[in-house]
Image 1 (cartoon, one colour):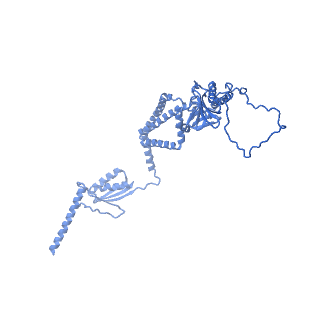
Image 2 (cartoon, rainbow, N blue to C red):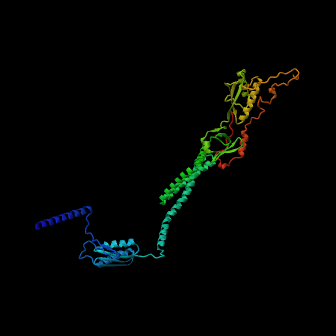
Image 3 (cartoon, helix red, strand yellow):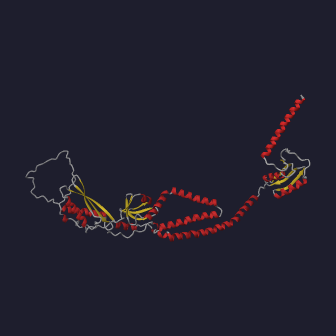
Length: 481
């Protein structure tokens, strides 16, 4: 029985030794070997129960308590964190007494004391210094730091000031160079001013970005550029219509689809161009109204320049009877067109048979008029009078359209007696002689001058300011062939 117990005890001891050896080997593999590590000290808080270290304490320490005390006093006083510092070492137990400025420095003192060789226990009796009620030290320290930052920023400020002056002269020089090169090719004063201001502004933004980068404010430079882009997007969305009109005004002033004084038609509105501003195109209508059309509407919609070539074609429709000679009627109309001073020979006028109507044969007349000298409306009116008179002299009829008249109650018929018959001759109802009418054959006595002259004069009297006008004055009148 005793042998069995001995074997049982040896087996348990062997297992314990094996387990201890395995744990030791695992600890050696996970952590690198340290040569002669200093003994670990235990920190004791005076407000709580003392903590006894689990490490083995040497019975014969190698360093005396006086040496530990002198070494710790030398180290902690060098930090200048403590007041009334008193270090007492008894049998390897370190007592820290005095006052400390912060809790972090107090913990740091405990860690330093625990690392001193042959220190067994550290009893922390340090107390925090209570700040005074009217302590100006934090404010003084903050002001001192601010003053130091200001002094350190003086060279950067001087450099930024010098670069700002250089940037100002650089922007002006670049603007002057742009005026001498590209600015000379822009005839309009307002458009040239917009271009030069854009060059100056872009160079200024680039210079500010470079200055901020050189002075070390890269974050501010990125913020400025990003803010500028964001503001541009917001303004572009908020003032989309204004921006669209502005870009359209620039495109109109560059492409020049019309000049000041031209008669144009846009969106059903006809008038004489007075000028183009950054907001819209101003017209003087033929009725005498002053109208402003947004530039985006002028640029995107169909625009007709009525004064573009100085020539316009009139279109007249006449109906003659079926019994009349169409060749004779065409010859009379062509002779009338050829003799008229306002009708151009090139392109040649045309007199064409268009269709057979109910009671007439319709003839279409095409003729070109010099609208710089003559009024299109007046010439058309004069031609209709002349052609009618000459066709009537030649016996050509202008029959009325066939109409059907219905009498629901019939037509009463009465017979006249001899006594009621009048013997007095009835007045003649013959047509008046065409020769007795106004002089409409030659057209020379009729005023055919263009009515645009009066409208242009009125438009010039109400001219917009020159510095707001993107269009130059109209070129000299075009010479008709």
